[in-house]
Image 1 (cartoon, rainbow, N blue to C red):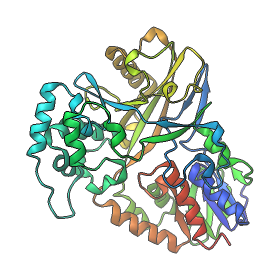
Image 2 (cartoon, one colour):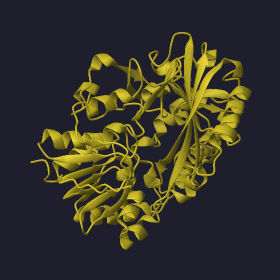
Image 3 (tube, rainbow, N blue to C red):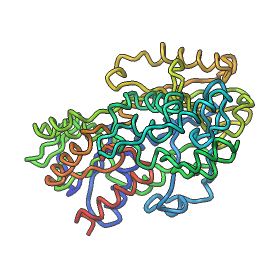
Length: 444
């Protein structure tokens, strides 16, 4: 049966950016309805409990730059006593050994023959051309040399984003990829250890709940919110009639929309010819995430390690992380929690045999590396993330500018990481939602 809402504002998506938008609207006295396709809220910021373990959908950590502590985040209702600040300890698995991340600032930890090659290559690295059409690959080679690029930086990023770096613009770098720093690179060639503390980076420290998982953030944002409707997947957005129709057939009138739906999908839902056409050049990768519960402790080489980057193309995953090293409150005593991430082209996800082929391949690879023993596995859970990493291709910027401008002219405002088709932190996603509402004229 078709129903109608007389809400002035519709929020699409109940992840952290959609919830932040809803909280801002509510606190400003604006009537709204939030529509979420899943039976629960949180989007990718979600935690499940299995046996002795709490698993997130994958590694989700609260990196803060604008606000000093979780309690300072607007509308999140967080208590600092529930959170712990973690100083990152990550490494790269290269040449059969673990090298402190970022590897480009810790080259001395490489095997001697690899170190010599990386130094020689760095000293004769090509200059980056002055035009604005450099690819991500060219940026990496010019910044760090061909040897280190081939050894780690290129395969690691191509495994993660499931695309050739020749297809990505150097603008994909932004603040999430350490920029070349000659002083740090050269110091790391001769100084073994300590470079992680000296190397700046957006994720050099982060916050995580002392007990449970990252969905504590969602619980804070969700607290006190009403008119949030689950199981309302959007089927159509009629821009002329100002209605949103769900797959249930429910219709909602709107004067404005704040959308955290992936921008490409949002364009398709409008059925607007120009928006659909512009969105065709927006590409993205998918991820399969395996959460593994282990009886007993992790191998000694992982003591205190939060995650490991794995560039070797013969190994199926690009990163392995350790929940129990990040917070002891994620599992029972004498147990350990692991997450493993596999990247793939988005077109391949639907046909992927996740619980069969891919799970076997991942577990076999972990055991072959000596990182787990199959007899110690208590449970394994798989999640898929259809839209994991958006691609900053040369066409992306102009397409997004056109799409966002066109949508805003119709009072449809994209918010969050996927709504804005960008690579952002959780803090950035929530802040984009709050600022969008405050600047929209619907927060009076």
